[in-house]
Length: 422
Ligand code: NIG
Ligand code: FE
Image 1 (cartoon, rainbow, N blue to C red):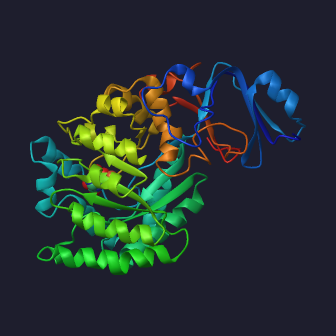
Image 2 (image 1 turned 135 degrees about the vertical axis):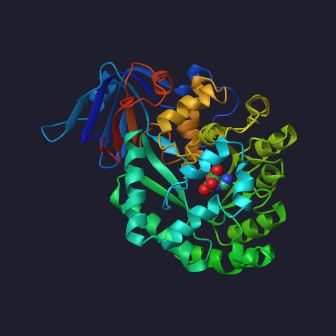
């Protein structure tokens, strides 16, 4: 197989998740589904994995020389780089003030309706310079990376006007250049109805569908997905259907913020549209979970948002197991409902808040999260030919990822595209 640029050897345990590139893990995985290798190694050349398996086998397959970086991983478990498939990481300002109001009893949607919430962040973001938006986002990406994420989705959605949303997508691309993680951009022009369209939300939906979306889709790579916040006080399922139909025709993948505060039919719509993912799902009824399973849509659960907003309903994880809906986890990083930046913490919250097993949590942060971005062939598992993205955790088994509750140092080393980056 030739020479390796990087060889990580003698990991106590390697979680390969091999065999899941074509389809996500559904139902409750047993430890055996994780493709565990004891005393394992990974060899990389350039940004690709060239060998993975028992240390002895890998060392027989590749050669190395004085240029090769060799890491002895004794005492550590090695996992695929974590994938964060849902963030709103480009914005200015914070919402600590409003969180105080929320904790004193004011509901999130009422704060939004009174001109705060997403609106507050939109005002600050519109006023911010592009340089500040880019550097703020790059800082967040670096912290996310140090906590284990090597692929991160980022949504626009805090400008809500044609030029401004494009400026955010450009800022996402610029920040992505500064940090060695893979960034997946999503257009979320339908995040809230701007006050200037309060009396005529249909006109804003027209603007999104007819002006903003085509502009976002015109430049290749500017946006890979289109998402809609389907919620009372935001966009109805009919609005979302119009926007997502156009997005599909323009070649974008589809995502839906579905049933976060009310059972509005967002998950059902995601299934009907064949969306790549349906996210949140706190209020999704069981029959709609069955629809998600049938359409192959990944459920992206956001325990950080759940915990931070003190939401009463929990996503029906038991129903997802029963109907075999693949479950992924994400940080939902944003200033209003989830300031969480650490996928290592999200892995823990998946277990403690949502009741996932450690195996579900590990699959949810890796291969299933990759499928939630239509990147199952590229990242999320450790197989020859895939991107060389992996982490070493501060403990001898995958259990130590959720077990550390996001503590500093829980992720001991991060390798992105074949390079040690943290
Ligand atoms: O995923 N719910 C809509 N969007 C975000 C919140 C954005 C915000 O409050 O600024 C979410 O929770
Ligand atoms: Fe969100």
